[in-house]
Length: 64
Length: 133
Image (cartoon, rainbow over all chains, first blue to last red; front, side, top):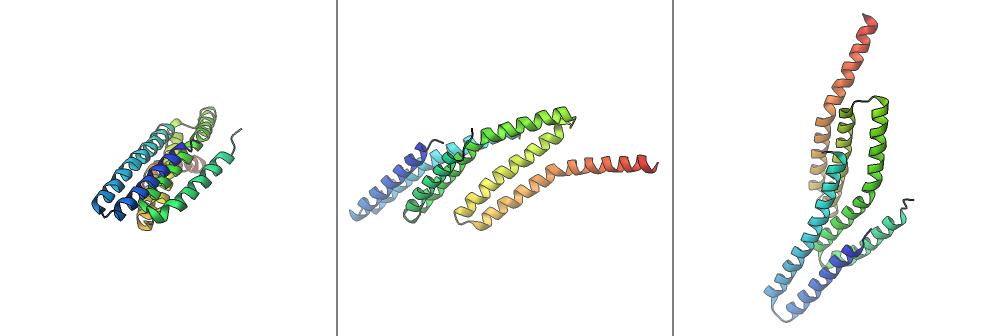
């Protein structure tokens, strides 16, 4: 049960939230949204990798 | 000895982080929930592999033909993944999407189960035929 991936995603999420708030207060909304998208794409990559690993394992285990 | 403690601990940690994340970034919370669910299912897979091995040895000893067991395993696998996908969708607030995934899962299971049912009916008819003949 490697909890490290949970901490990675939480860290990225908090980073995105902080940078979003800072950029928004500095009045640069477009950059704020760029950081949100960047954070989302990194987390999406981690999630897709884990879920595809699960699907592959289940496919080989249940032979379908 | 397999123990539930790490899994429950992991689930609690994920729940707390999700509670923190959901109001701020709902989309990241959904992704985190998906990852946590997938990791828990991955942790259980070795136990399921043992059960599948046991079933296969019992089937080969008991003379049950391999394709019945293969169909059974497929059904369990489809149910496993359908449940995962439907609950993930429901967690993200998409109840309709979740129920559609479940409907698709049921239909796929039905398609696999029909040959089994036909085989059982044939067996019964043959037995009845011999009895009445």
